Length: 262
Length: 297
Image (cartoon, rainbow over the protein chains, first blue to last red):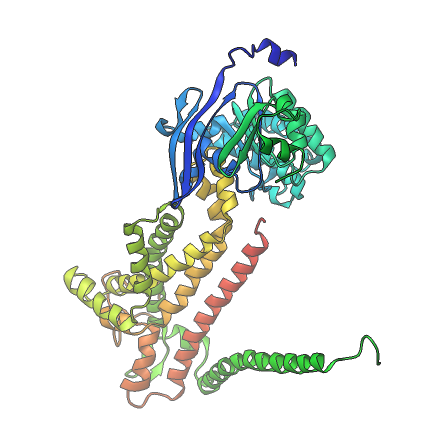
């Protein structure tokens, strides 16, 4: 709490500004003009049932939506004050944003290479530079102790939960300023989930985190603010304490977080 | 066994249908082996008197009625080797573009359509095209170069199609994971897509070896000749601009054009052609198994 207190809730720095974001896949609109900000060094939880546009929204942030030919995006997304659609170096943008996809995806490379992949892509090739990064990221993802003796075995041979933590390590490997976690804990046991949640609380000191989750209790434990997305619209975005206090403005939100609906 | 676990008439009927289906399908699978065994057995029996290493290494003698097939064997090696040297890089690189880079627009749809239709063009039409384009228009003359390029064009669409299939079999999630950490498409292709599709790509290319080796019309029209004097066992008898002999055409010549050929000669030629093709296919299978065992997910 001390951190957010010193960071002056009066005027938080806007790390991400989204205004009137619309997204359609082949003419079918799935995000209907949403606007919100993400403050620097906060954890913003995004909750909402399936098909709410949570994952699609994340893909607009790092512009991996570009790879979907049928997608058309309008509106404005600013990261660090810059319009992402005007950025020349989209790869630099993607390195500023760590993205953890919902399905555990170890690349068919060694564990070491999985984590070293992103630094290598951006030009870091010396072993002396790579090794500390790999270790640090694997430690942060609570995976180091399990794999430190077999870094050259295949990332795809790990269990689902381990692969998911490997994905987190990979997302941290390019030292992002923003970390987006999309349902990161689906395949992970509760104990390990708690360890990663602890890491996320530490990481908040340095970076901004967007946490998309179906576990409303996880959102409650971790986040500073919570956004409730429903069918491509923002129902409500407010301090997590307010959302979960049962005094939120929208009846839908109250119903969703208390498990009455959705 | 009366009671709850007795067979009802319905289950009995199902079991009969099941066993009928199984025997019909099994019989049809077994029927696949029969023609192959018959063809190979028939050829080998008739070819037996002539089959020897000497037959492979020797040159045709006495007006092609005796001797071996070395010039034709080497000629086929040349034609197949050069044609695949041309078509493999073009085909694989084009397939990478089409599968990894191309957006869904009219141009790329046109390219796809061209690839599919090119694969359906009969070989005799390829032959005529090769004659017009390479022999006359490009002035390469009747030569190994013209014949190889004709074979290359013939194999190109199939290589593109099989490579695309191999690339598409790499899960999309791997690509997305790479893009998410800021990798370019090429970094993604090089690090993840190619290493995991190489077995399929190689298999597709190797299968084209047998196809190119067996084709007769395209090489007959563009560079293969009736007879060419070559030293026994000479590995480099031809230049790019030379005409050459080819196994497929040699077989045709022996079987239909030359009188009084020793009876076993055409059959022995067929055995060498078929044997080489089967050997190459077997290599492809072994390679595929080996690479698949190294597959990483």
